[in-house]
Image (cartoon, rainbow, N blue to C red; front, top):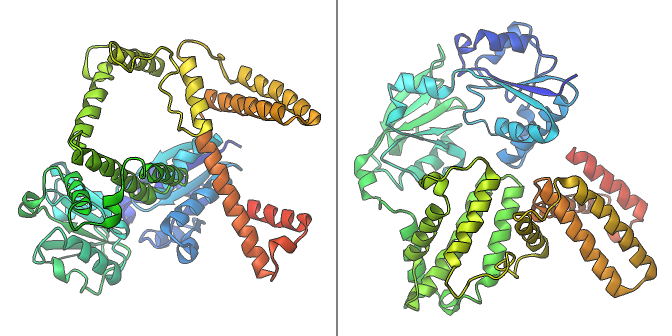
Length: 493
């Protein structure tokens, strides 16, 4: 049976909003999953004799929503490998459905087909009951992740997932940083669902006092032009620059004042790897946070340069802006390109022309690859550079054969026991593996980072399991540890 996931929208809650074609798919599903059974149309589906499983228990036991969505996508994709399955969600499948996004992105890697059957979103009903035109500008925000988000009072804002008065209280505190306390907001529950719909307009400071807030509740915050006018047009970068200037100035932070370009190098590298780890974990909230930490390092270096009269953050932004325009003549000019290879070729030609006549003119195509890069990343760039002049395998098969060739030489070196030869052949086989990864579109640094994190997760699981048994790993036999390792692997599956 073909591996396939049919993602179905259930609409905002009224049975009339559930498309007939979606209902037929639900009835005919080999196996049907609902993200949640807490939805107005679910009881009606039961009455139609439709059998299904829900993932509500994951919400009760998981440490975070990110964990919930990952577990859901895991279960759906595993089931789909046995044949077609249906995964149904409230509203529209592509509106505020993180698990659907995960399923779609990961399905392609597993060779699983995806079909999406849309339905009316809760946003459509919300626009209708509030008589709001989204073309005028709407910012949609997850109420559970509002803290730290940049709000734009010039736009109307819809805050989703206002599950309770406690959540509403947290949202209120965040909104009060950008809006006056008397600003009128609309509290909307079950928009478009007969018998459940309720709308009430209250001042912002009273929004958490209503006792009928539940999982179907959203908040609409109308635009506030006065509050928007008070925000800097170039916010928030200028504010960060001002903060860094204060930290480095008289009466600032002693540690920050002592730093220079060289002492900050380790932090720049650490923050870069933390961004990579967040990307590998597919944690959007961590990516946002870690990108902020990385941006801080850039602003820090720019501030030091500014104090020395060399350049400032505006020069950095202006320089990269001009460079991107110059190196994309197929976007900002009249150059025509047919594919990515032509884009990369033009990029190298333009880069070389930018250096002509200057002290930094390169004599080799491989000049300019940073020596401070990790060895895996540097070998990847070396190979990619060489490939741009045609020095490359036509596909991964030749590179894969090279791995086997190098593996034989490595085995021979290990048998002979000469350290210098072993080291040389170890490097050769790693270089061949990087080349094969590159030709299949895989970044070896990212791949190894994922494996490192996987090993850490499994090893920590082994430690916890051993602790529950009242023993240390060091006192266990290799066979006993292997048993825990296999248990950790099966748990991830």
